[in-house]
Length: 326
Figure 1 (cartoon, rainbow, N blue to C red):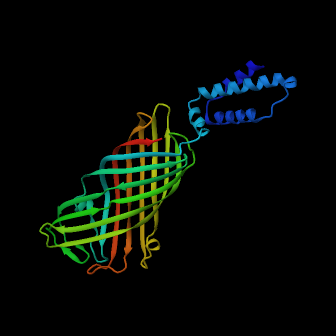
Figure 2 (tube, rainbow, N blue to C red):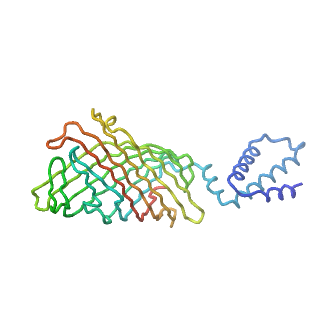
Figure 3 (cartoon, one colour):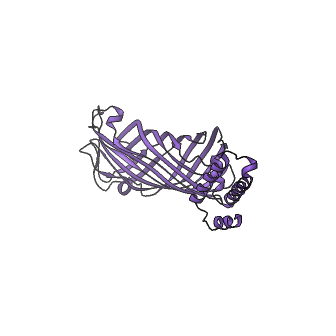
């Protein structure tokens, strides 16, 4: 009888459904009321054999340690630091300042057809294995030098053809977000939440001799929806993704009476390796895009307040993650 059960268990595949059913069996067997020893000693022996057999099969499974971890009390606080360094490429970047202004292509006309250094810092605080608070700082400054092939107008200021032009696009931002991890398994994560980003945009166009200059500055909040996922393997390799984004009318957020539409998408895909329990390295590819279009209230002359600025960037980076407290 016992040998037939062993043969039946051995024929089952070791997949997630198998392991889940096994855990249910263990729970039922452990929680079942004990029968009197005088009447059901044989059944009790069979039940003990079933438990031992199931546990033996679970120990042979590659995913068993992850499920076992979900039954253990998680650390009260986990703290990690992450840093990335690499390069940024401009796929497309268009700007227009004022409704009568020129449509200016940063990549084709503004010298942004090269690679720029990329750097990013973030830190995570995770509470009780579920609640994740992330703080991110992203410096971002692109500069270009070119000679205009045609007249260009920014906010009513005309830069004639042949003018040596220096341009600066600064878009550093700070972001804080919260996410809830639905898995609570060490090395794995499926988390959903929300965030708030503070944009700090600066657009500057200056002739090389300093006689002509147009600039815009903007600081404001950007709410975001957040998703983050991670899946680790027993050999230390893991892959993950992180997506922050939103498309919304900015006027409804900052209280402006003017209709302004804005969007932001920060999406990455990474592959990493756990060198130790506290140190991981990873390779990351990221899309960073978005922009805004609309007219701001109370513009400063000669600007009429209209802005159209849409960007599409791609970054490639190497990163390291340090788990300081676990």
